[in-house]
Length: 442
Image (tube, rainbow, N blue to C red; front, side):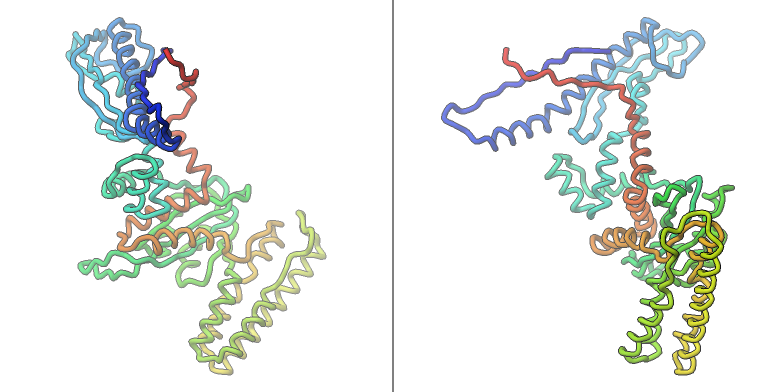
């Protein structure tokens, strides 16, 4: 269907002079309030009329479920409908047709557009809203949409739209090389009946696929790592395990996710930082803590050979294997020193972490795959989540915090997956073309 549309505007300006800014603002106000919504409404009305005419003539070219074996349609009535969009409220009166044989009626334009029965907004507005609220609070998002985009949406409506959206759904990728997991606290809405205080925690899992790209796997609140591991196992299905799990030393994390990866790599950065804290708990003086921290970083500073490529050479294998054994021997010695000095917590901390500190090197020796030795990939994502959940808002429900975390990690770590979801939902298929031919005066 192709039509030539004419836009009629009455323009009046003072011959005594006016400002460029006033002209721009008045034009913007006109098109945002009436021009763009009216333009969209006009096109929809033209399509609606053409659809109904084709149906009544038996010449319809769009597929729809027939009401009976030999449908014969007639025009019935019109119904008012309004949709919120990013260009304003689009209002129209779409036609309802009825079959002469069976009496069943339907609205052709609704089926043609793929609009749900009680849909009140466009999907493109839902995307705008979701992306805005993932970066600032609902109150500020409502004000931002009104001031910048002239889209008046109350914050309660924004919250309902985001809560009902399925844009946060995540899928386990075909091939996963590394799995990263971490957690972060936030101010939760207290629930005395469930004996919940205001100290909530959101837990996040990310992956690195075979192409080296970061992908979002999930976010949870109010669940243990064992429950999260069961959820991820169901999402993984029959797909292969990740080569390596990279995380800090949080209790229960490695055990809860053990079925998802073939090995566990303790984060070296967290190892050095947390040792300082455990020594502080053992009442070690600061100069001694600093000295032990430097000593630990020296032990952990094993590097792969320069220009290492697959396959792994035998001399590289023997060299790295010897260095790993020596580093583990030094860690045993360090743990023994802590124990003799009465630093029981620090000694136990080093002993528990020792066997998982060089899993990345063992993976390289076995498969030639270079794995991370620190969880820096997920740490950056946790900063984004913390900014949204901690610094911008508080009083989250557990469901709301987990959903917002999934939106954030999907947007920032799986941008292609995020765009692909919206392209499919918005049905962007190059089936609409609009050409501006210029502005003229009659």
